Length: 82
Image (cartoon, helix red, strand yellow):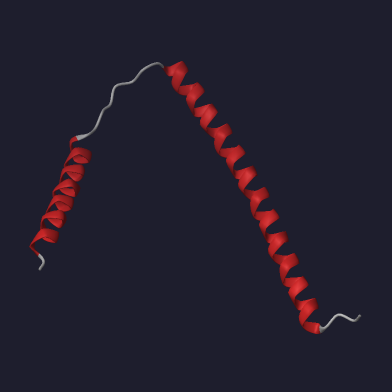
């Protein structure tokens, strides 16, 4: 029995999808390994440095406060729409 052009195209598409999935999975594994390695190095350097307190500059606190006020205003505006 001969294969039709449609069957060949379907097999090609299926092969490309499977190949792309395998390549994507491989890239994901490599990327996660790199992220884990970087995280381990950062964790190790943080442990050597010792505990540090949370320090926010006044400008950072101001921007956080403005953002929080904006979120609260948006939530309040949702209740006004009818």
